[in-house]
Amino acid sequence: MLEAIIEPLQYGFMQRSLVIAVLVGVICAIVGSYLMVQRLALLGDAISHSVLPGLAIAFILGADIFVGAFIAGVVSTLAIALIRTRSPIKEDAAMGIVFSAFFALGITLITIVQKTNKIDLNHFLFGNILGVTSQDVWNTAIISLFVIAVVFLLYKELLFYTFDPVGAQAAGLPVNLLNFGLMVLIALTIVASLTAVGVILVLALLITPGATAYLLVKRLNQMMILGAFIGIVASISGMYLSYFYNLPSGPAIVLVASGIFVLALLFSPSQGILTYPQSNSQGWAFWKEIKNLLRSRS
Amino acid sequence: MEDAAITVSHLGVQYRNVEALQDANFEIYPGRITGIIGPNGAGKSTLIKAILGLVSVSSGTVLYRGKPLKTQLEKVAYVPQRSMIDWSYPATVWDVVLMGRVRKAGWFRRFSHVSRQVAATALERVGMSEYRDRSIGQLSGGQQQRVFLARALAEEAEVFCFDEPLAGIDKKTEAVIFEVFHELAAAGKIVLVVNHDLGEAITNFDDLVLLNKEVIASGSRATVLQPENMNRAYRGQVMFFNGEAA
Image (cartoon, rainbow over all chains, first blue to last red):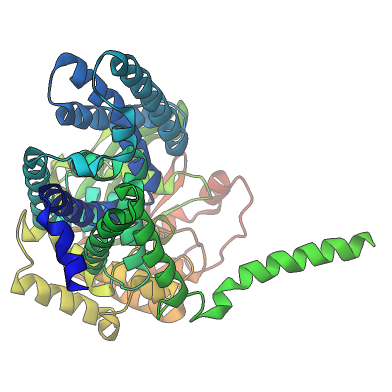
């Protein structure tokens, strides 16, 4: 058992990828908690898909692709806000329009660049954690420290704003700045997660650990801490599964996180489906209606 | 009567070319409980938000002691409609009451001992101390409203604004709310309350602003609750209230 734990650690690439996976697990859970409590899970998906054209353009220009990805992520949130405030289109539709447009542009650009360069679309879509360099580790560590520090310093303001935005505005807090700050944190977190899980699966790391914790605790700070712990467990066990069974690492991490979520969903002491069976009465009502329909026909 | 503390002049709000509020002119006095009444869709919530600058106004000014109120929001406590809040948010009663101290605590700082003291006293005042560590989602509607009242008290404000605080609450909560309103008024604060119901609770208000897209009447309760005013505001559809005011 102990050997199985130590064996992968003798490889430099495994050390690096484990460090990145753990950092990403932590900041995704923390920042993702804000998305979840504001019912903005889809926004996480929108920003993550929208970073692709930034990656491609930065690559073409020879700039740092992560800076490009970050800029594209922030621009997408501004585009969504512009459509939402300056037209009768609602937020969910605005997200759908912006993220699919950005994503399509990203895929087109990368496909063009791919022909002449050694760059792989799949690495961006699904992550390439085994190919990380020590520079990537440093970048992720710095971003993670920054994100954690900002959340720590602005915790009470962000709690007030995400719970009651109008009340926070009435108390004189700069709510537009707070909102923009949150968007920047989300974009940074997604960029830091790109190598680990890629743009398609990062949503799972943002939402699933926080949602799991939400089923078990009752305060936002507890949700973030427990969510980060779940993120770490999922990251490490996902990496080991990936190593020993030769699975793609991003999906392995996400599957572990999802498995933990299912456990909490079934067995949460306060609101589990199995521990509180009456909560699945919805399902019974569904069958009853079908039965009634069949009966009324005959 | 004392000089007006808040002067609303020519206040108007447009939502996408729909006139939600036009040319509102009235005054609000300290030490009195002022109710904003009117039929559904009259723009009551819009008016209170426009006064605080929470929606963009198309015209007009709101002055508090001679300066725009919008620039003195640290003196304001605002309680939104209960239905505007996601009560499944992961927070306890204590978390919510402490929000009333965020502005006073200042950026990058933790809550001081004084802030915790003030929050605890406010919670005590509304009779919710024993629920301190309860999730807000587990409270009844009345208890949630009292937690919000405690949050407003914790802000130690000069101007208190409440949007529909009496909607869907129990008798006990209603009694606590009006007790606190009277205390605030007695302390010389401004108390501004959007109220949908024209039942007997209305006798708790000193002044009224009667609204239907525009201000139909404002002033003392007796002058506003004249039948001709009410008929104009409610287009003759009033189940008329025959209290001592009319």
